Amino acid sequence: MGLTLTPEELGRLLQRNPHLRIQEQLNRREAAPAKAPTKRFDSQAEEILYTQHIRPLLIAGKIATCREHPRFELLPAVTVGGIRYGARHYTPDFLLTWAGGQVQVIEVKGKAVKRLQRDYPLRRQLFLLRYVMPQGWAFLEIPAEDLTRGKFDELSEPLKKTPPDREGEKGPDRAIPENYKPA
Image (cartoon, rainbow, N blue to C red):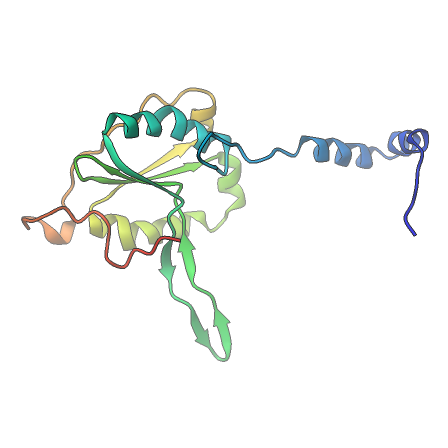
């Protein structure tokens, strides 16, 4: 029961209906996720950051570990008045542990994505308050446009910070919190 058109009929239909022409062009342009030899990324900017900046530092031994898209719980699931509200999470693009022990969270965000994700500033702030600040981690947000246009110079190890509630405390680095659960 499908509609069958000859190529000529399809051409005439597309000429008479410009919105169909635009949709056809969009369908042809749909980009597949950017791929690197061993990793899969959500965007071209993430791939550039990993291949040109993170991977060389991993090979050189300056970065001890790199986790892609680790998932952190911001709010637990709750049930109120018989309605269940799911847990809320924050997933940064990279979680780096430098050879010196400092942990750095990296988020690559484009301007368009920031506008579309209206709750991003709130999720980022909750993540900073719940994980980054108490642990003394560094947080870096890189504009995707800087990476794709070659304006991002280099990634460097952040300065060592002591978490505010642990100033003066001695002992081993507290890199990853006990309640961290990888996705």
